[in-house]
Amino acid sequence: MLLDQAANMTNIIAAQIIKVFYPFVIVKTETGAYLKLNLSTNEQRDPLFWDELRSILQAKLWVPIGKHYHQLLDNGWLAESTS
Image (tube, rainbow, N blue to C red):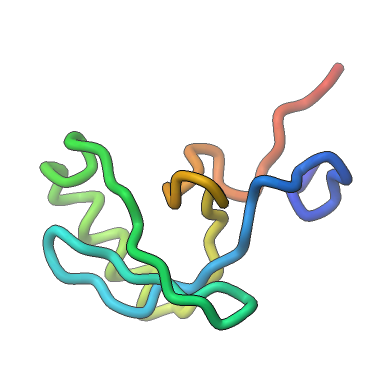
Protein backbone atom coordinates (compact mmCIF):
# COMPACT_ATOMS: atom_id res chain seq x y z
CA MET A 1 0.00 0.00 0.00
CA LEU A 2 1.19 3.53 -0.70
CA LEU A 3 1.43 6.07 2.11
CA ASP A 4 -0.91 8.55 0.44
CA GLN A 5 -3.61 5.85 0.33
CA ALA A 6 -3.41 5.09 4.06
CA ALA A 7 -5.84 7.16 6.12
CA ASN A 8 -3.85 6.79 9.35
CA MET A 9 -0.63 8.33 7.99
CA THR A 10 -0.86 11.89 9.32
CA ASN A 11 2.77 12.38 10.36
CA ILE A 12 4.11 12.41 6.80
CA ILE A 13 4.40 15.28 4.35
CA ALA A 14 5.47 15.38 0.72
CA ALA A 15 8.45 17.57 -0.12
CA GLN A 16 10.58 18.37 -3.13
CA ILE A 17 14.34 18.72 -2.74
CA ILE A 18 15.35 22.28 -3.61
CA LYS A 19 19.04 22.43 -2.68
CA VAL A 20 21.73 19.84 -1.90
CA PHE A 21 25.02 21.06 -0.46
CA TYR A 22 27.04 19.16 2.12
CA PRO A 23 25.98 18.81 4.92
CA PHE A 24 22.57 20.39 4.21
CA VAL A 25 19.48 19.40 2.24
CA ILE A 26 16.70 21.96 1.82
CA VAL A 27 13.20 20.87 0.78
CA LYS A 28 9.96 22.64 -0.10
CA THR A 29 6.69 21.12 1.11
CA GLU A 30 3.37 21.01 -0.74
CA THR A 31 2.24 24.00 1.33
CA GLY A 32 5.29 26.05 0.29
CA ALA A 33 7.22 25.79 3.57
CA TYR A 34 10.99 25.36 3.39
CA LEU A 35 12.64 22.84 5.72
CA LYS A 36 16.19 21.71 6.42
CA LEU A 37 16.35 17.92 6.58
CA ASN A 38 17.86 16.33 9.67
CA LEU A 39 20.34 13.75 8.39
CA SER A 40 21.87 10.93 10.39
CA THR A 41 25.62 10.64 10.80
CA ASN A 42 25.64 7.64 8.45
CA GLU A 43 23.74 9.60 5.79
CA GLN A 44 26.13 12.53 6.10
CA ARG A 45 29.16 10.26 5.58
CA ASP A 46 27.73 8.23 2.69
CA PRO A 47 28.84 9.51 -0.77
CA LEU A 48 26.24 7.33 -2.50
CA PHE A 49 23.50 8.97 -0.42
CA TRP A 50 24.61 12.41 -1.65
CA ASP A 51 24.72 11.23 -5.27
CA GLU A 52 21.18 9.89 -4.93
CA LEU A 53 19.96 13.15 -3.41
CA ARG A 54 21.40 15.05 -6.38
CA SER A 55 19.64 12.62 -8.75
CA ILE A 56 16.34 13.15 -6.93
CA LEU A 57 16.89 16.92 -7.13
CA GLN A 58 17.50 16.80 -10.89
CA ALA A 59 14.44 14.58 -11.45
CA LYS A 60 12.30 16.94 -9.31
CA LEU A 61 10.74 14.00 -7.47
CA TRP A 62 8.61 14.35 -4.35
CA VAL A 63 9.86 12.48 -1.29
CA PRO A 64 8.11 11.61 1.99
CA ILE A 65 9.36 13.50 5.04
CA GLY A 66 8.52 12.91 8.69
CA LYS A 67 6.47 15.91 9.82
CA HIS A 68 7.95 16.17 13.32
CA TYR A 69 11.65 15.32 12.88
CA HIS A 70 12.09 16.43 9.23
CA GLN A 71 13.81 13.21 8.17
CA LEU A 72 13.55 11.16 4.99
CA LEU A 73 11.54 7.97 5.41
CA ASP A 74 13.40 4.68 4.97
CA ASN A 75 10.68 2.95 2.93
CA GLY A 76 9.89 5.84 0.62
CA TRP A 77 6.20 5.98 -0.27
CA LEU A 78 5.52 2.36 0.73
CA ALA A 79 3.58 1.63 3.92
CA GLU A 80 4.08 -1.43 6.09
CA SER A 81 1.65 -4.21 5.18
CA THR A 82 -0.84 -4.98 7.94
CA SER A 83 -1.43 -8.61 6.97
